[in-house]
Amino acid sequence: MSVSPDGALLAAGGSNDATLKIYKVKDGSLVHSVESGSGGIYTTYFDATGKNVVISTSHDVVSEPLKV
Image (cartoon, rainbow, N blue to C red; front, top):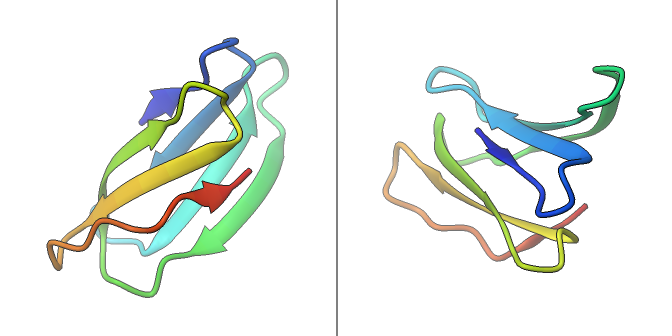
């Protein structure tokens, strides 16, 4: 789980779920849902701009940045 640099978004993915979900911190609403297709998601990280998220998965895959 990670929070965007401006504190507005939260990125979360589960170890048993290959779906990255982006939520608004303010109201908890779902903004984006993206299927990684690479097994469970263990790490999420926003870049400095807050516009991209990188994930690592249970298959030792680090994704290309996903546009938020």
